Each structure stands twice: as structure tokens, then as C-alpha cells.
Length: 77
Image (cartoon, helix red, strand yellow):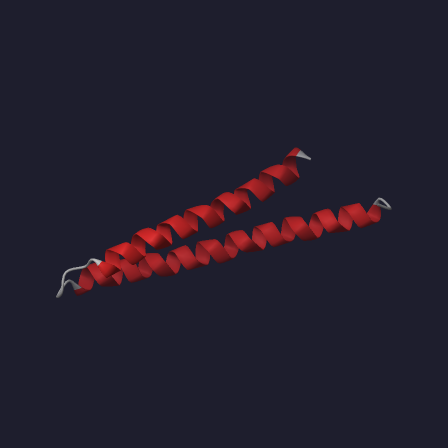
């Protein structure tokens, strides 16, 4: 049970981190000074990285859910 709990926790934590980072990047974009294209570009890349992190973490959570469902059905519950 510890392995499943750890995997689920890691997936949820990854989603939270990705969302927090996305908020920070969005704030950087919103408050960037005019003419600071390099800063905006860097924040856009960070925003995309956050999206990928959230998507990957959501896949972890979905995989754990599928595994638990399979295990529960296999035990006759």
C-alpha cells in the first residue's frame, strides 16, 4: 500500500508544483515591462514547462487509479 500511496502522492504533488509554477510564470508575464521580450519569452517557456509537468503528473494519478481499480476488481471486491 505504501508504494501506491507514494505514487499517488507524488502525482498530486507534481500537479500542485506545476500549477504553482504556472501562476508564478503568468504573474511574471502580466507584470513584465514593455520591451522586455527576453523576460516574457523566458516566462512563456516556463509556463509551457509547467503545463507539461501538470500533464505528466496527471498521468501518474490516472495510472495509479487504473492500477487500484484493476487490483480491487481482481480481488473480487
